[in-house]
Figure 1 (spheres, rainbow over the protein chains, first blue to last red):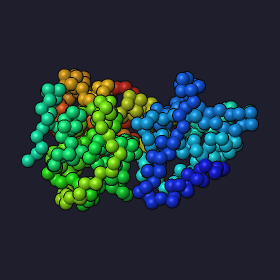
Figure 2: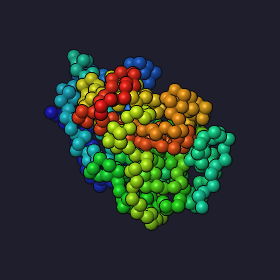
Figure 3: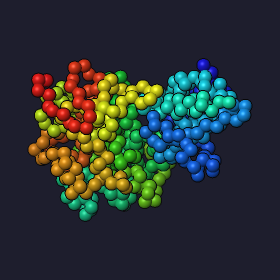
Figure 4: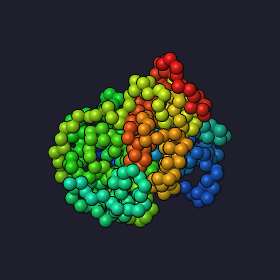
Length: 142
Length: 300
């Protein structure tokens, strides 16, 4: 299983604050998720719905010639927790090589110290997003 | 003295119109002594992105549940919680939240286990307030701590346990989950662990009335005529009914509990909070799959 520099930075950001501040960190991440580029914003049919999330979350993965992964994720502003999780995955995996993404250890979420603070269904949504990212990467690898 | 109820023609016909307030009324009464606004959302970060001025937050996940047992907090913990939030026993609590007040009604149900007298729901919830362009703030609210008394939780009136459900066979039950959950089709998703129950389906004889049927597009409650059609005509509930509602963990069914109790005026409505995650994992309890309610079990 692999990790990434982005994931390590996220874990550090959550760990350096006390437990009661960690949701604020997640909120900051939710606000940092980049907007979709026009080519996807105008073509939502290209995106895959993450059925495991209660909120409408959509994603798409692109691989360049060297199998570097670009991730596009969108989640509604009315669901900041879900959007925060989408942002954590984006920051952990975007621009990483495909094998790193495929081997990414999803237990990284357990290291954030927030599993008691959010409901299990939310965590499930994050795993759903990651599972779909990995599946798309596998399908598109050169 | 309870805070004066709103007079609003839109609430005409509801059995307890005093349990509802409009967004307009809330805006006009903001900051009045004796009135506390409380936001309770499914998404626990939503409050921090902006909330109604003066509103305090209740976190349904970390603040209302017992930390270890599958149960709610006890009277002492509830007294500590509400004291810390700056709520007095005599205060009028106005609850609102996301998802058509799904979680606001859940918080109301939990507060009612402790007998808090005056609790009202803001019709249309957070979404309607925002759609109408009313003010939001991200400023943290620091109400002065109060001394909320320790009240023993009453689990006998509006709460049902598994054994109560077994005793209840032959009387009306409502399953408020989505149809695929009711039929048993949806439990596992591809490549995914299930939702916390080992079997799919519903409790025999329970009628399917998904909770969302009770609300309009703008997240306000449907009119009394529409609610009568849904629950009295279609689902066969009457004033003399003894009703149990359930869902997955008891949150969606709190919404139906509110509708049946306060809008339709059905006197005896209980919420089975163990719900499907308990029933669908219990050994030797009967389960029915498919769209039909199924017969009342004979020898059970």
